[in-house]
Length: 108
Image (tube, rainbow, N blue to C red; front, side, top):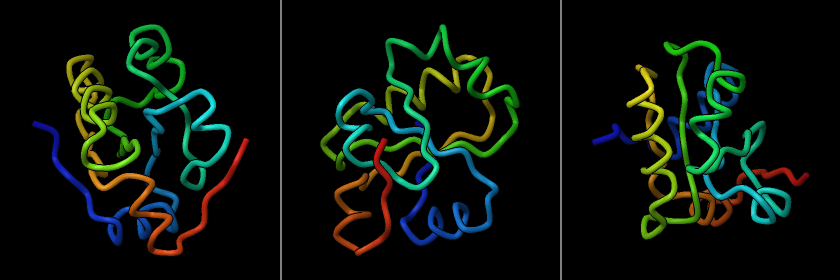
């Protein structure tokens, strides 16, 4: 099971610039709103895109999707781990929690 990260821990990591954030929703959801600096990567594209998007398999990576009921972030995190990424965590509460806390987002 993928380790979790809290909102406060994730915000600190984003502010420090030492994490790659992966939006596991992709598509229109990503275009409308995503966490600052997040990159879109959906499960169907992990195998083909991960190496180019995430060249350092030891770098800190955090996946997220909508909320705890959304399975996408866990699925992408599990796939990345299976591909040899060693420092993957999941922001289980997702973008709904981030927005509810009044934190900034970006759009494409």
